[in-house]
Every structure is written in structure tokens, then in C-alpha cells.
Image: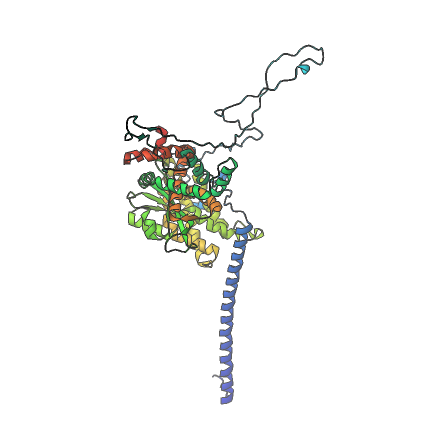
Length: 524
């Protein structure tokens, strides 16, 4: 039978007090542990941000990595039972040996360049043999070539309009009409305008530097005059830009990206307000590059860029949310960019000290898997779309399954606000768009081509920094569109702009402007 212990009321109250105190201590201990975990997580995030800032300031900017191409199709361990060992197209997996560039051989100069021949001869007193004193005879020449530069030469074109008068009266005076110019009564010729435009929009030279360069050769023209001329010719080319945009929106595949731009004088906006320049380019048909200025980057403004796009077209973008609304509104096939996904994990890996990096690091595992996707694309770059489609279906689809499984397994254990957590969040949100490229051999895996097209603008922006007015921003967008479209079509931008500026004043109808499109100059 149980033993009964008699205790007094005072003793019972003391035991209850001890129990309550112990419970309070336990709760305080749990709260302290929760606070410690929170503080530890915040400390780790702060250290990660510090390492990120240091890497952005002092670290390498390149994201290039070894894609492990020799092991591209050796995926038995990674793919496991999902791999398809049979029926593999051995012709697709054959890889030629890498041809290394020979060093020590100078590239010959262009044979089309004009050549000046300078003949070097021995003095007559030295044209005798040192052994028997006989006169030497010419048996050949040894040639070497140097590239010479003739500095810019300025000239003034003086237009003389002849005046005629009747010898019998004072009423029959006639003057030869002035030729039509892109800038009526403009100070700069079409050739000079094209030279300045290519200097800024192709080579990133600010206008004030070009003004200083012209002064070296006697052309004392202010940078304000040059800037006003660039605005005039940029806006005058708007009809051609409109036709370029119509052709772009009719393409089957379109890339799109945006970057920041500062405009100082815009009604209702402070000079420090950020504006944007959008880049759109075709991925099929005629290569076209179109740049557009907008005061913001909301859905309403972005949607204007796609007004008139063909229904069912394919659009490749980053993960910016308004692109999703545009794709739904215009019934587009929306593809996601794997380069933007990889960038998150590259940043997360970069914050880990090199001594602590191992192949099992989660960010490194994602980078390696994404690298396999890009290696497959690099391998099939010159293949037909049908053959590339077979590779994607047999290989890339299985790599995507591994990425998806790893994403689901690791998402719950990562701090959401960390760099790695941001990468996993972005990957989950973009996943339906990221895997769509496997459906068609013509669809791209990334938005890299558009980023490459917008890079000249970003490089030039470091020199000229901002646009003074909205008209200047629109003119710059137009001239960038013309220059980059010329480059994409293998046309010299200076030659095209000179050709365009001469013919623009003569154009009156839509057909006249259509004949001035960059790729139409090849048939001129």
C-alpha cells in the first residue's frame, strides 16, 4: 500500500513556490535561447553582408567558372535511375579537342588598307663584297609592315547659292534653293554629325571630350552646340525607330532588360529621381536592338513597350514582376533567365572564406548543376534546333530534376534573408519559367544576349553620367538603337549614320522611311 507522508501547509506552499520558480527559470531559459538564436542569425547575416560589400569593392567581378565540359555526359552518379543509357545519340556526345591559339604570330594587317611603300637601300659605298670587292647586285627585298595613323583633318564646306537677276528689271531675282539638311542651317555637316554620334554612342566618349578633341585640330565648337545637334538628329530619326520597333514586335522571340538613367530636367520630378532605359532585342529574324526611355519601370510604362506584339511570341526576361503581367496580358510564352539564378548562388559562395569552401557547400552544388546546363548549351551552340532539343530532353531535363529536388530538400533549413535564402526564394518563384526553355530547341536559356546589348550604354554612362533633358534621353535612346542594330547586322555605324543623315530630309512617305532601316542599306 502507498506510503503517506504528512507535510504541513507551510511545506506545501514552499514546494509549490519552488515548482513555480523552476518553471519560470525554464521559460526564461527558453526565451534566452530564442533571443540567442535570433542574435546569432542577425550576426551571421551582418557578417555575410559585410563580406558581400568587401567582395563587391575589392573582389573579381567575373562570374566565369569551369563548366566541367569533359564530364558533361558522365552523369550516372548524379542522375541515377532517371538517366537514359540506351538510345543515346553518340554523334551528339562527340567532342572535338580544344584547339589552342598559336602564340608568337602577329596578325597580318588588313589587305584593303592603302599602302605607302618606303624603299630602304644601302649607300653606294657599302654595295661591295667584303671578301673579293665585287659590286653587289639586288636579289630581292625583305618586307615588314607598320600601322600608321593620319590624325583627323577638319575642313569647312562653304555652300555658295548662286543668285540670278533679270538685266532689264529688278523683279526677276532668283536664288538657288538651299539643299535639304537634317538640321536646317546647322553648323555641322552630316559626316561630322555621324562622327560625333559614333564617338559617343559606339565608343562611349562624352561630348565635352569630343569638343576638346576637335579643338586640337582647329574646330572651336562648344559642347552645348554639339549636344543640341545630337538631340536634333536623334529626334529626327524617330520615324525609322518606329519602323524598327514594329519589326521587332513582330519577331517570334524577344529579349528585354532595363537599367537606370538619370535625367536632370523633367517636369514634376527631382533631378535625383531614377529613370530607366529599356533594351529590347530580337532573338529571331533580322537582328534589331531598340532602346526606350521611361520615367519609371512600373507595369503601365513597361506595357507600352509591348503594344502591338504578336500573340504567342516568346519573351525572355529576368524576374522583374511587371514582365509577368505583360506576358499574361499579351498571351506570351515567358522564359526565365538562368544567369540571374546563378548570380545569387555565386554571391552566396563568394561570402564564404576560401578555406571553408568544399564541394559539398550548398551554393557550390547549385552552381555546379547550373554549370552543367550551360555546358550543354555551349556544346550544342552550332547544332540544329532539332538536335539541340534532343540533347535538352535527354540530358538537361534530368539535371533540372536534380536541381528541383535539391531546392525542395534544402529550402526549409536556410535563413530566408540570407544570400543563399534569397537565391532559393528566387529559384522557387521563377521555376515554371526557368524550365520552359527545354520545350523548344530555339528558345534561349538566359537573357545574356540582351545584357550584352545594353552593356555599351552602361559603359558610356560612366563617362557622361546623365541626360540633361527628356528630349536628350529620347534622342540618346534612338541613336543607341541605330548604332547597336548596325553592329548586330555587321554594318559600320559611322557609314550608316552618314548615309541616314543625308537621306532623312528627303524622306516623305512610310516607304521612304522603310528604305532607311539599317539592314536595308546593304541593298543600297
